[in-house]
Image (tube, rainbow, N blue to C red; front, side, top):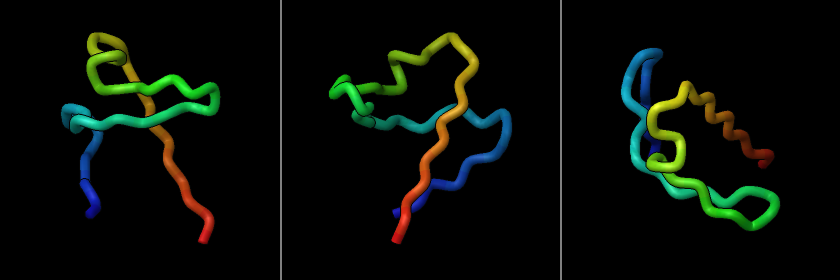
Length: 42
């Protein structure tokens, strides 16, 4: 499933782990400008 968003759209809900094992959610970033960069190698 893919979510398409445009600049200025609200960030959709998500749960992502970082490299240190912490889990990040949309609520953790609420109120601050955010850039979420995701990539995959196939």
